Picture 1: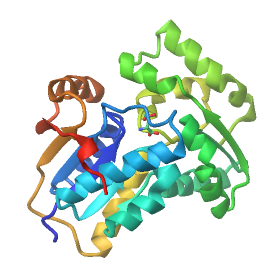
Picture 2 (picture 1 turned 180 degrees about the vertical axis):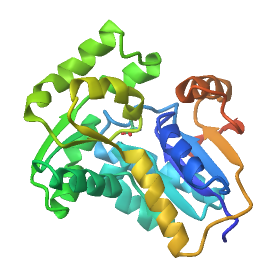
Picture 3 (picture 1 turned 45 degrees about the horizontal axis):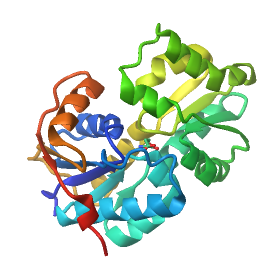
Length: 271
Ligand code: DGL
């Protein structure tokens, strides 16, 4: 069991931010990454469609014999993590709980204010509000930032770029005065905008949801004595084109990805 890989999935490339953190924390684990590039974005879709896609993604990872799953996608984590966990029957970690706890801990040292940034589907789900209230935080603001994903997907964000500044300012200027203690980057893509988000929220501590989830899965594997000491291989699968995935993933991570990339037909992974 220890030698089995960890599965990670996302609607596309964004989950690579969580994968990098997981690989940094657990370099001896084999990892299977699935990016649903053919069907991105999830964040603008209905809860029913998100659930259908998430269960297909989970069945694919289970077919690869994974020992645990990291749901890197904020949209899936906030809309149907329970259904993914029920199907998987192995440890499943989403990006909500650990990042809500970290953001709450930071806010408790300040004014008690937390800002949640995510896709429309994540914000509409109310999952972060519930998790923050469970951590005794009730001064919560939420902002859906639907332009952030296409912004990150279309070019590598640059903090000096005028269009990037206009979009980030449009979403965040109202919150600078409110002075949140912490802001949850509740979407896989947002860590790539961290520098510029910070510019508009200068006094706010940014919390990356993917990095928090990677920590949580490490703790679970340690507790269950499931850590691998001899692995380290990463395999990438995409519902889109393998060559395009490799090219864009390298740009996304600012360096060549290390591992094989293969195309799969995700529609085959039904009930
Ligand atoms: N992976 C999604 C998330 O973290 C962002 C991209 C999308 O909308 O599919 O919410």
